Length: 386
Image 1 (cartoon, helix red, strand yellow):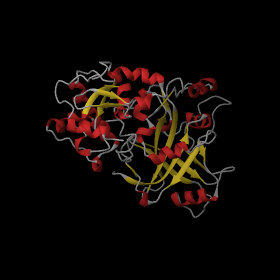
Image 2 (cartoon, one colour; image 1 turned 30 degrees about the vertical axis):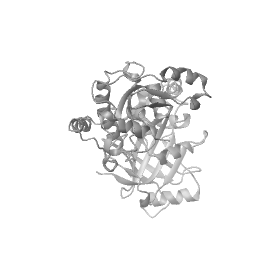
Image 3 (tube, rainbow, N blue to C red; image 1 turned 120 degrees about the horizontal axis):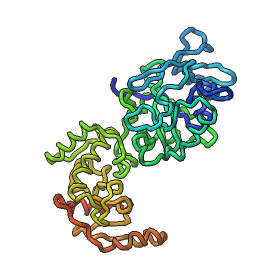
Image 4 (cartoon, rainbow, N blue to C red; image 1 turned 90 degrees about the vertical axis):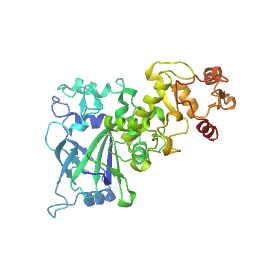
């Protein structure tokens, strides 16, 4: 199945209430009993739901079957238009919510589950502790996502992402893997609200590939987040695409067109580019000499977003450590054609501690790479940026 237009998105913040609902009915007496999310109850929302999931029996109050879908799996459920004081989305009487919304002890880019935790607890105290430990595990705030596609009736495509998580969860980072409209929905949730909903028209052209997983969204890769080299090094990639891009570099074909680039392509391109650039600099920061891999970034001279024809050119890259990369990206450090570094003192005067860190670099020279030195034209273009 190819990418399709998005008709609606449901976003559920993973709060204590949503944890109780999705964790499962196996928890003992006094524990978790629900197997549904309560929805909004205003007339406009109810009308939207009737349009998304029309009644099948002619009875507008009758529950309507829903299938929750993810790559390689499905789970049955219902949209229930009337239940107590508001409608809800349920997943039937099974012990657990759709697999993608549940916990696993050690989530990775290869697991369907994203939220870290023990999903097997049967006592209330242990089950509660799984939610309480999320911050200590570095998981940030999880968000459960359900996507309704045009022409795909009575199905919701489910995913989970993490916002503000530690580096080891970069594979599920919400900001890097989803479109800005979803970021806006998340940011619009007040601290006491659990659910956000938005319906779209075909002209909005928001695209989603149900056969892909966390990288299912077709995002403009020239956006602010994906233009950041440090963020891009944590994006998902495709080994086959990465190899093809390495071959492309060897053939001195350096373009990566926006028209064919997905989030995964950005990750693959950054890995291919970084492999060549970091090797050229002996896997050391050209300014500080730092060699710890986790602190090294292959930084574009002409930013990724500015010129798609030179995105893979090794002469458009310098191996920098994290602080230096951020200072270069922000324009606090400029690099002359002879590879000497200039600090913009005026922009750091109001932060004495930052100035103390960067001042030793003023007038220093980058270590030249073994081959493919930065192209003077690229350095000039970077210095001309405002």
